[in-house]
Image 1 (cartoon, rainbow, N blue to C red):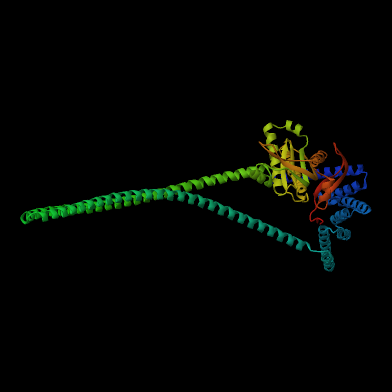
Image 2: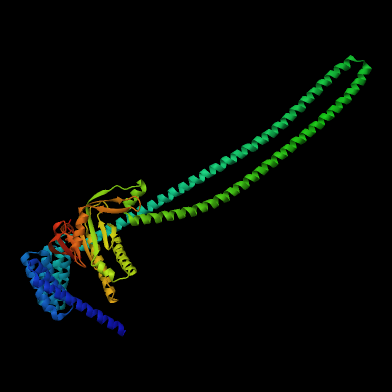
Length: 558
């Protein structure tokens, strides 16, 4: 417990020391400032920094800076800064427990915010005035203050809650449509896979049936040959019987020609011969019938054997088919897993539309985009710092920083990582073909600097060298495409890329520097500090701005 309290006190003292250093730096800059705009911004920043220390003894100093900034903003007719400076001055009076002046300055804030249509500061200043009136037990005045704000919002369009509700409704609708489309796609993929499997199964069954038909035809042919042979034997026996009958008739004619006695003897002999022949014929018919029955028995046995053979064959084919289907399913699963892995690897290198075009056509055409925002990041004094670190530690620290950048931009669907070159990191937004404001990429840049600040504090805690980065952003037209055949890469080209690199080179440690073009697109969303015209290599003078922070609740004009 004691160690925790000690650590907290150490961290608190470090924070106070850092805040004091920042205040002294701002005071020095104020002494050197020449333009009215710079003096206004520096007075405001000093008031804000002093109040951030939480030292009530310095609240009067913060009040003086705030009032000076308010006066300069009024002279410049800078509506946005007029609201901010009035609010910071009111906070200073409140810190001094001067409720009367605090209420006056919060009222000034409300009036200026209504003119500037700054809903956030209207709400915040009204809330402060209402609390002051409540502390003074003046509940009627607190009600009138809130009612005045309510009347303003009622007259000037949709309320914030209605806008948030509409936004949430649209978000839910879009998410539901995405889910429905994904379900339909999965269903179609499943149906196509089943149809393909059924087609293969039918082809296999067709082949099996053709083989079975061929075997049955051969068996029928053999049976027909056996029956034909037996029929030929019957025809031969019938012919022999006919010959015997003709001989009997001939002998009968001979008997007529002999004498009666001889005829009787001859007749007796003939009768014996006929009886003998009839016995032979009966015996032959019996043998033929027995042969036919044997053949029928053999044929039945053969058909039963063929049936058993076919049954065994069908069962064997069925088991083989089941085994083959299981093996095929396992192989299909492996193939599908490998296909998904290859798709994921391809999507990790290329944007989704480019990857799809490469898979379908084997190549991707270069595309021109009219409004793309390019971000460059570069570590300051990288060579000197790298000499203080072992190679393994250097690679590990670079990997940690770039992984952090990758994670940050992955939170925004419209930002695409382009490449890393040494210690430089490059990404861009607006490559989807749809025109969009560069709000997300500017927000991502601020998050990158915040991430590096956290890394710096951790490295300083363990007395290790750390990286600080410059970030530059510019918006304009580019050409994007895939270069190379082996180990191909997605890249962008154009003057916009070169200008973004120059903007980054003229940035400062821990700062996000943007060009005039980008500033026009994000000025209502972010608090930006004008730097004036800065000389850029091969580009001449460029208007540049430092992005300080995102404006909470700022409305984007239509």
